[in-house]
Image 1 (cartoon, rainbow, N blue to C red):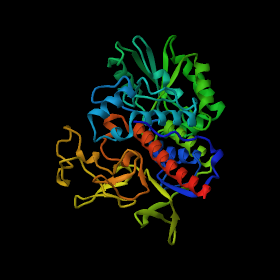
Image 2: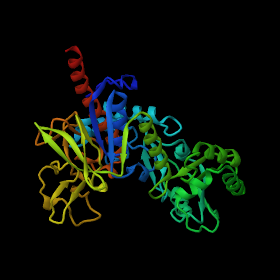
Image 3: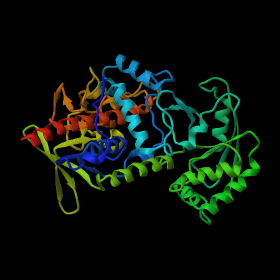
Image 4: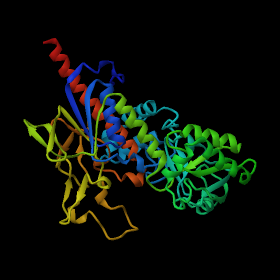
Length: 447
């Protein structure tokens, strides 16, 4: 299974000016689809009710972490897992599209935002010190991929209540690393007020304060005496927001040690950095980015969506569309919901929602909290291999595609598959649209 090859430059941007694609949602799937479409020559309007889910994430990219066994080779695992689970999104997306999505994101973001190749798992400490698998990581986290014999000092900030250095250090020390062996870890907690008198600070407030060169030098110099020779320094993920590379470099230089960030509870600064990079890139490449506007419906004619309705102050606004990519997320974003009567709904375009085979709506939630996964979270829209939305095997509309968490069949947070699904489905949806647009445009030019 492969994905179409599409030009990834904007040199053809004016060629398809009559063709307009509306992307709904500004998470990783929506932004990737918008950029892919734009670089392929389409006009793109991205409509989103909020800033998207990337800022809630850790700035890392998961492909497949558990099957349920811990994964060591993500691409190999996707291929094997999809062959055994035909209902899973990866069975429709295919490993080649996932690879294409990973490569596309790495090219867009650059190595100052993401390291890794997707071939091998990177294992990082979490906000409680457990070791989790992922695929791409910010440079500020790469030294968190610990090996046997590593010595770690975990630095906590007393004013940052969401980061528990003692708990993290204890759990790192007691955990057998995926590669075997153990790392030793200890905790140090220091006082740091990002602003005078601020005793309960957010990660973003601390990150903004460390963007200032003098402030970060004061903190780093104060930490030097707590770092023993040969230790790796773990800090909360607050090393700057706008000047992150400079902050990281200054900490390494002043401390004379390798430094890595540990992501804390959402919203998470590394996720914000990646979100900001992708949004700025989309705007710079002339994606029309409509923030704070919710899509409330659509108009359909001759089996296709001809416009989407956007809620604005006073009255709704219609945006004409030649194609639509639905990338609004799943239950976590409200794009899919279970109402008080136990009925499932896709809330943006009112598309039909599919459930796991053999289940009814009464079976979607069971009472055993610690038992098997809730079937509810495998619900979503059905797609074909081009990510065209279907129902019972037939297209719902001839020009509506889906990408990301709205697609049925995955328990993304348990599998650690969310970003891989988002990227692969966005690539396949965008490429399918560009292929159809290209054919139509070529015919028009010949005539």
